[in-house]
Length: 385
Ligand code: MG
Image (cartoon, rainbow, N blue to C red; front, side, top):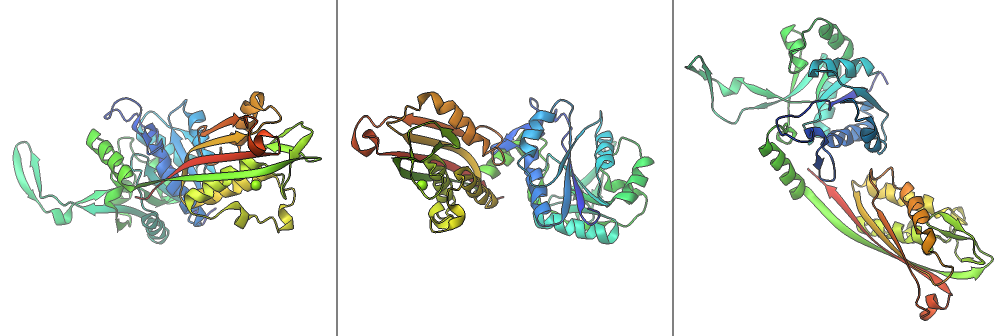
């Protein structure tokens, strides 16, 4: 842990300038604004640069936050914020375990992974680092009605995440007042070395309504939506288990197949893989492979969803239709739906699955009770900013 940074996300503010819900909890592209930064921190964890995520939040939001945090691979610590920003930072720093810290404002959702890695490397080397950007506008200092020139080549805007050697930061925090607006200024005022790294225009802070609309526009312009379709059929025979959506159902007839023949899970998997362009379950989990003999198909479905998520996709919705004449399944729909949804909690914070059961209307092979058919449509979305 000591070689890896703690990524502290400051999400405890009231965000009053935008009005309504605190801005860090507003829905931005299907997830709360703070979660964008958490996903970046999670990528840094997977790359071996970050060891933990510390989320500093307002009191009373723990359950809502935990639902989303469950989707992350990195260890997540949830910490209550204080009455002012400086107090919230102190709480987050106190709870972090690494020797190096990144302190990031959740109101900057579009941060760059490569930039974060440069900042971490610089803080390990020098003790503190901060992303900065030059001003593109001409500048003028005006005070008490007197206007004087300001050289824009010498003035820079500071961004986050700001990175620190924890020991040095803790020493400075203990002697600082609570009216500071960021932590790098403590190093600057103490005359300690700071590495200035060129930041990113996309890491802008969402403060005004214009910023918010800009963020929504960026997400819309950078999003790709795909639809996937999955279909499966299995024969109904005596002497086999009947497993549907991970639920074992008492029945004189079961479905024939190499795995447990849970055709709902198979069709969901194929729909997800198809939407992401990742092939199909027949190729990933071939029937010729003895490892998949009588396999639990919910595991194959989870593995398929994990592959889709690893490619950056978010599941928007899954709509499954099972067509079966016998046995009668209508009463079991809620149980099957709950069972299926449980396998997606890692990939979606909210319930995103619908299941319908249709009879075969006594027509064709389904209607004669010879087989069941399942067809599934899914929508997935990926945003690349
Ligand atoms: Mg199948």
